[in-house]
Length: 327
Image (cartoon, rainbow, N blue to C red):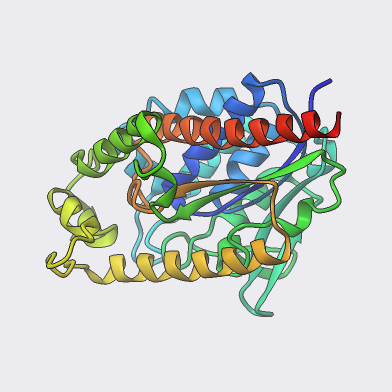
C-alpha cells in the first residue's frame, strides 16, 4: 500500500523549481500525496501539482530562455515592485484553467501575508490562480495582490516553510522542503561518493553565466539585471567562498535586500520546524542559484530530485530498521 505523504513547500524564488524534482521523486516511489501547503514558489508548484497540471507547466518552464523569462516578468519600476508579473500569471492561468481550491483532490493551502494587518493568511478556498498570485508577491520584486479587500504579499514573509497547515492532513509522514538551506546537506564529509553528483551540480549552477539580458529598458532608463539579483555572475564563486581570508562579497542594494530576506526566512523556518518537526526535511542550499534565475528550471528540478532521493533513502532505511525491530 502506498504511503500517504503531506508536503510543506517553502519559498525561495527560482530555487522553488526544486519542488518539482521532489514531487517527481515521490511519484516515482509510489507515494500518495494527501495534502500540500506552500509559500510563494511552493504555493505555485503545489497548486499546479494538485490541479494535475504540473507536467504541462514543467514542459513550458524548461523551454524558457532568460530573455523570454524577463519579458514575462514584465519589468516596471513605477509599480509597487520591480516586476508586474501579470504576463507570467496569465501563462499560469492558461495552464490551470478555471479551478477553485475546493475542486482539488486533497487539501491545499496557499500561504500569504496580509501587509496591512501584519499577519499570515491561509488561503484554502476560492480561485486557485488568485491564491497563487497572492502568495508569490515577493516584497519589492512583484507587486502585492489585492484580494477580498486585503493587500496580500509573499507567504514567505512570515511563514517561509508552512508546516502547520499540513499537521491535520492524516498522512503517514510529512515532508518539508526548504529552498533556503545551508550547505551541510551536500557536503562530501561523511557522505562518500554519493554526494559528489550533488556537489558538482551545485557548482555548475553557481558558475554558469546568467542567460538573462544584461540590460533592459524601463521608461527609457537602462537597468542592469545583475544590480537586481546579485553581483556579476562571474563573481559567483567569490560570493559563496567561505574560506579563511576570502574577499568580502560585493553586494549591490537589491542583492542585500534578497540576502536579508533569505536570512530572515531561514531563521523563521527553523522556528517553525521546532514547533512542527517534519518526518523528512529536504534542504536546497540558498547558494544553489540566485532568486531570479527562473531560466534554470531543468538544473534545479534535477537538483531537487537528487536531494529528495537522498533524504528519502535515509528515511526509508530508518523506517525499515524500525519495522525489523518491531518484529
